[in-house]
Amino acid sequence: MGSIDQNLRLWNDRYDWSHRGEAWSTWWGGSEAQWFGCIYPRIHAFIPVRSILEIAPGHGRWTQMMKNQCEKMTLVDLSESCIKACRERFRDDTHITFYVNDGKSLEMIPNGTIDFVFSLDSLVHAEKDVLEAYLAQLAYKLTPNGVGFIHHSNLGMYVDPATGKLPYFLRNLHWRAETMTARRFKEYCTISSLECIAQEVINWGIETSFTEPVLNDCFSIFTRPESVWSRPNRIFVNKQFMKEAAHLNKTMELYNVTSFRGISAKPISDR
Image 1: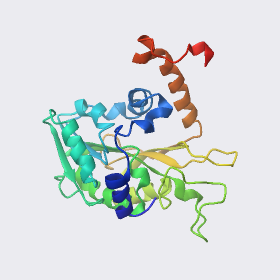
Image 2: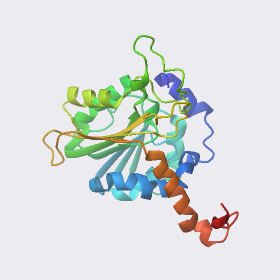
Image 3: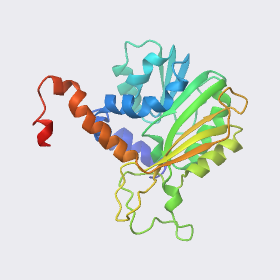
Image 4: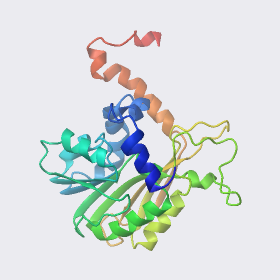
């Protein structure tokens, strides 16, 4: 994807946030469908908790779903405009605290205070130096049984080490970080005295002329080695992730609010 400065310029200055990032949930039939059908089932064991940290919330697409799952929530983003938007959007939620950081630092978070750290659809654009820095600090920020769920890039597994480039058939249209992999994330956990306990390697909306799905992303879950969640890492290679999204999208044509209000463009049987 690029450096911290490049990410800052894109998300702070150039990206059109008029729809609060909702376009990224289109594949699932909207953010609520994506949350309840895709995200919540993957993290429900770890929430609700006392304290949640969300890294890179954007305009709060997932904050709106998670803010009632805790007594205290902290949002950290390198984009001042994103934090400003979140302050306004959640101005009535007095249990939320907002910080602008430098893209790597969590020094504003007291040690041993975070029960659950979450980041989705944001750190996929962060290169390996960012993930390494965050994990090194989260080792201190988590409570004894704290858990983290981080969505990050796995596109680096396709980079040719000799050339440092992706193969001809793979187009990085979704700005994934090309230095991150699932294996590297696990290594950073080990270096930081954390324990990676689950990794789901997925194909997230990437275009390719290659017949095999490109496993460009990964959901990684980690904790402290002494926590109640501690266990050997389990890895699931999910080549059907986008089919899961398509199925949920089709289901939402039946069950979303607009269907019951008769706003659908045409009968489902005609689609």
